[in-house]
Length: 143
Image (cartoon, rainbow, N blue to C red):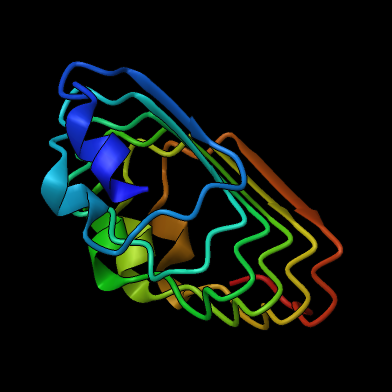
């Protein structure tokens, strides 16, 4: 839990893989993750707050079934290059701030059954080279 996370020295960590471990809502306040380049989160049942992850380059969100929308601060991850979102069954849409991910080169979305639209500003992702959409049944048009 958070006690072990606080005791660990993660300030210089570059990779953090969290499988079935729940990430407490205050974890990012307790640990400074400025050097983190790769984050993989699975089975998360909290509201993800990426505001302190400015240097993050790779983010993988798996089975985040309670996440209905990504926070506005998601767009603050200006160094993010690769994003995978899979089986986030409650995710309904992406906010306009998502389009501030100016370094994003690859976006892979898999089995986002409720995702119904992409932001109109999606074309602002000028670095995007690869877009993968699989089993996004409600998504019928692209901007």
